[in-house]
Image (cartoon, rainbow over all chains, first blue to last red; front, side, top):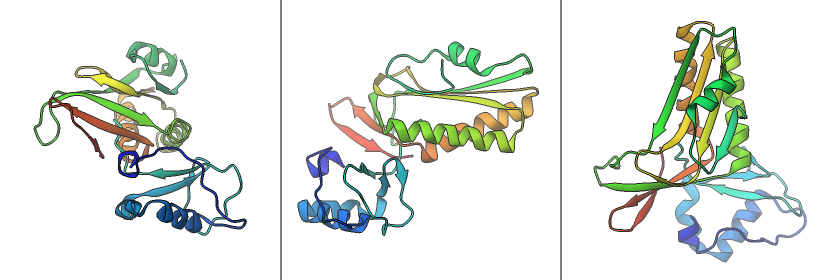
Length: 72
Length: 138
């Protein structure tokens, strides 16, 4: 993911009241290559995987894009 | 040593065992995941690089252990995963289960490693002899 997007951690600015869907759209606007990851990526907000992407985000939240895991 | 850890240095299975075992336990099982010399497709591997979302992985380890406590009363487990660069032969993950009797120790150890592989927020980059690498999922 980091290789595809060419960046790892960064700040994302979204309007007040934005949801995780809005964050994803902001990421797409930043880099359309992210579309290739959409089906396999889970999204976590502040360390918890979001079941629904209509969760609202707040300033300072950590949004993590999680590719399929490979531990062990 | 803590029962759940993400570490950057070599894993010592005996330290984990000591943390998990208690005097009530007559059975201890240990699974060690070790870096092997070939990828699943047969390509020679020089090593693996692991990355983790550490806070999430530790929470997931604790959740898995909690589930084991429900499924196998009296069993305690410890889970340690190493991250960073590992060479062939080095231990990437250790899971230890201690129980009064052996059936639950085997079952809990198996459950723990299967769940770690399925859901812990850890990622693996296989490094090949030609200098390239690839992220691989379980």
